[in-house]
Length: 240
Image (cartoon, rainbow, N blue to C red):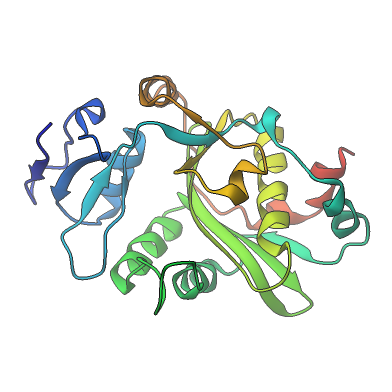
């Protein structure tokens, strides 16, 4: 299957089902708010090395988590019951994505694929009320977090980081419980990791994922800050 080249002036994408065997659909374009929203609304995401052309992905299978499938290990209970960390939304988006950029990962050195251009692009999405962050705090220290894009009833997760044991896991669990309380149907995790698999994530066929995305296009999106959502986030986890 050929890879499509995108015109800088054309925001449309080819059919995501036409991605090649590696999951790459198209090359080029830009990281404007308009193009990014068009991409996510069609089940696509950008992923490329700094300095390389932008690659747009539609992998098969797709790794996702349905909120009802969330698994919370017994070992996590003390983190919530004892309030070892505090969780907030949309209080430190730039700090979260910057920490995700600098997170040391197996097989990588010198940071991740998140370039400064990517940071600015997603901060612009955040300013428009589409991209959101989850922050995990140990006192005044930011020790974990994640960020992603919310459209309709889907949340498209992008990246997470952790500086202390189980910090990102606690943030993710809190987010999933919160999204479930708001009627969200799915969290897109893009590609499989053991970390997310342990939390209930699973692979589904691209065709099934794209059907969910197309159905979600009929849902309304209310952009805006989730800053006030954290009045008592732990009650979503404890079921109160």
